[in-house]
Image 1 (spheres, one colour):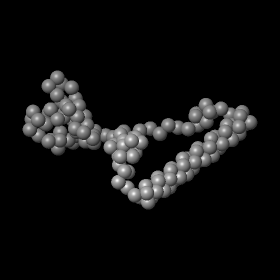
Image 2 (cartoon, rainbow, N blue to C red; image 1 turned 30 degrees about the horizontal axis):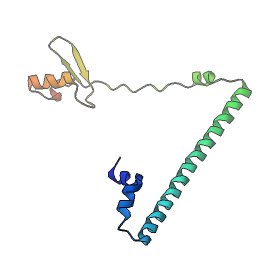
Image 3 (cartoon, rainbow, N blue to C red; image 1 turned 90 degrees about the horizontal axis):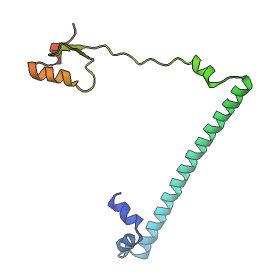
Image 4 (spheres, one colour; image 1 turned 180 degrees about the vertical axis):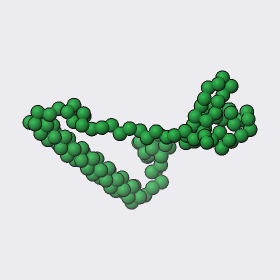
Length: 130
């Protein structure tokens, strides 16, 4: 919790911070907070409305499926899972134990490769698969 929130959430801390403010300043703060409160309520109500519409559509689809004698398993069988794209290895090394390691060159350098680079004083281009 930030210091600002600690002040806002504790009445005595808030009172202490507001003691030097004029009544007009306090009224301005109250008006601003009320406006922010109204905005947050409107956003939350919109989220709930969208969720309710989504649930109503899901219920309508379920009813239609039941009337047609279909189950979710019937649909699941029709949808092919998208296979993950296999990224071909661009680099290959063999460690001291004879294990072959391959790496696509994406992401962080694997530890086996980093050890190999440090030991042999080469970079990844020296390990490129021809």
